[in-house]
Length: 470
Image 1 (cartoon, rainbow, N blue to C red):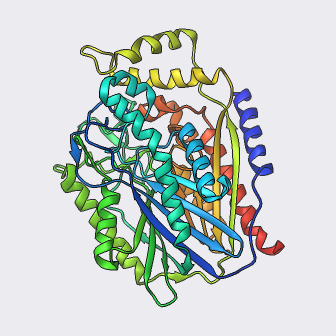
Image 2: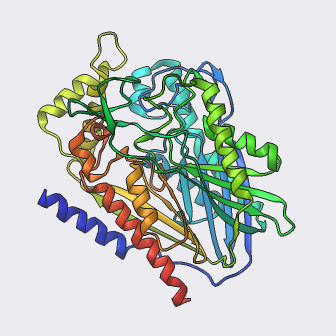
Image 3: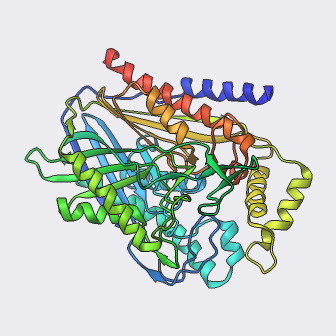
């Protein structure tokens, strides 16, 4: 425990020292937007976290959506991809290709995965289990993705035009639920059986905030809406590709603001939050529930449009830092067991699912060979009111709320599945002794989530104080 504590202090110190310092004096804000279709062909494997399903078609298209912002000499790009995750190695490739095509530095590119569970499978371990033509198609899709994302950013930069920026915060308390429940026997279970008599209570809550960042032209033409919400896009299910509720949200807002407006969605800190209400008697499922949730959130955004606040100071700042987080420990016996269990996943009579979850985590931890787990934190801001943060992995909701409360900015968007790419689940320190799926999955040692939040808070304060140094 003491070694972990020292390692975490070292990680935090690195974050404070190594933040990229940049910014401009207030200047005209320009915004550009673009979307590139990234829907795979039928036959590409589906990408729920442990997905081995072969897709049969498309319910609705997937996109890489890019929002470019420019103020004075500062330029940034925010990209949201309808994918379950962006692995760290893929993030490196995406940043490199965007920089090659556009000249935009990696420090100024914030990548996100919306975390739809109905996107393509791109992890080589799972593609190898599937094998055959489907695996080949999956690898080909992954190889072509950087070019498509870079093209979206190029088009967004080419679209830069004078813009106004506005912010507001909606609220939605009725569609998201904490999925970790304390049972009467003392165990914590993810999504226990509905209306089980053994339920005691949820161990935490949700984040009902619906942050909205809106951009329009000086004459009021809609350009882009950025929506953030802390809930897994894991509703749709089935063998057809789908952007899940963020896709329905975007389609609904397009009916109100027009198809020319880009709706960019990023998932908040929803590591322990999803759409399942295990206390309800009945609940819609599949695409009907996707439509319901997407349209409810769209209604929240539409209400928020009427109370948006203008952003007067459009000074654009950005920071990026890298942490070295202590990884989860494992024994030689656990590694041997993992190597036996994982290849049997999906086979008849294979190991229990949670054994596969642990196997994947142990095998990835073994690849580090005891080295720290490297993870980026990114932060950007407009003036002294608005900031956004990109964090890697599926961050527990209480960590995100703590960062919002710590932020000096009046409006702070906190997105998971971002920055340097997924590092799997990032629980709170207190969640580790509770166990269950998310904790078994986590690659970071207890305290890693708090280290990410402290590093992000340091970047936010550095940007906020930069106003006095301008």
